[in-house]
Image (cartoon, rainbow, N blue to C red; front, side, top):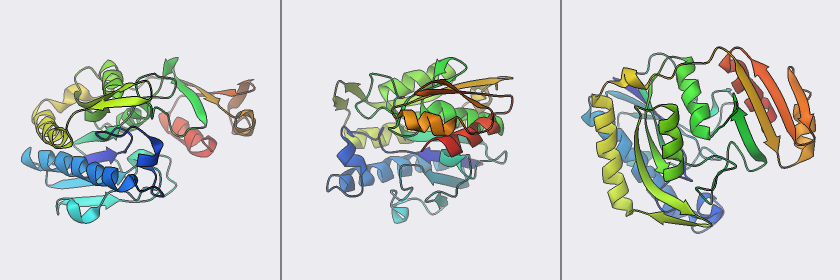
Length: 266
């Protein structure tokens, strides 16, 4: 059984401030350790469910956050960014049995996390077919593109709710909830235990129920904080400038959506 894990840090237990997600700050080290622990727990849960090959994408900012030596020996760790449009799902293909998301966070334009954003902090919101999109949705559709079920997510309560609305049979572990500029978190060790058990249970279940049906057409709307970013994106083939801060893009194939995101999320 070959399993794929994509991991971020803003949905890791206790994270409440941007300082805790940035390598330049002293606070970062503690949350790097916890990110590693939660990813390791997901790997252990997968191994307990029968996985023999696990690929992990370090998908936060630099792509150099997870401590490799603290992961199980069966893991292959993807660090940094290749430039491939799959981005947070780099190296995913149809050979994987299932995909998991660890440390994911609420979307831009939501009120459920002080660290809410989608792709980067210059984006006010992204809509896919009229629905506000979190990074989880973007990753889940990427998994759907290659026919891999997305079966589990851990992170803040907001993203867990959004994920289950998209994939009702998906399993979740909410390690915290956002309240204004604060977060209310469970104990870090409890999060590790719940993620390990949750992943094992999800992978022992009927993962086919978590296959995401791909729409036949994608209508994308992106609103940027800086009007210059929208102006720049409007020159990408197929993009139109809807308003000074907002562009639209239409595509039949989701890979074209990912290509648009890859080139227009400065």
